[in-house]
Image (cartoon, rainbow, N blue to C red):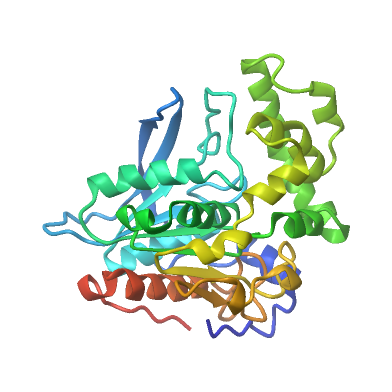
Length: 337
């Protein structure tokens, strides 16, 4: 990925915060979605938003599936940017929500986590069953780690559900990312932001399922390490935070991926230390690494102030199209300054 940050927005922190709050997300109207609620095999539900683009397809067309990050949704800035890209290229677009992220708390004791590859696999199976064209999947941050874990876990069987996958700004070494977000400026800003929504959701879970975890320990948690130790790890079958971070990380398994996979990480990402990123010898031949010097965490702004965030979706979408066969069906390229 040939990305150069604008001079007016230097550094990983600004390249993370500004795009999420102020940059243009789309070049057309704000995406409109149609929501479907799917019943899960364990008696719960997930909500999936589909792009309403007004196209009545008379032939199979590519489908772009976008998995959001921690506490994200189909209205996150990157999700709207990917939906805008799909609309521009004539692709269908599906944006599944992890449990509890669609605006309504889910029913089961479980929520979601960075290594939730079984949920990813089930969602992709449902989408593949109803769609005839090429299927491309992109996961952002947490969603990208889970997507790569799925591709690695199922190996050659991944091709039954997806033609190509991409992970964007994903903490594929969860311990490195977890420690990074728990220090300094990151702790003051991002940790507090996530805890403001994670803790109330966990308390809702406790109200649904009394005794699920220690309420006082949760209220005493001040960072994601403590939160994961009290809630995420034990509720989802891990011994503790260290066990969760170790077993859920995608990085050690990248060599097992057998479908085209793109892993994009800016080297100035505040959440993902550059030293934790994989080298070419740590991945298999099916994995492509893009590690530009700049971009922040899911930022990659471009253009004059206030800038836009389509640079990364354009680049990732082009790669996915080329490696999934979608380019042959709907090959129109977009170019924005």
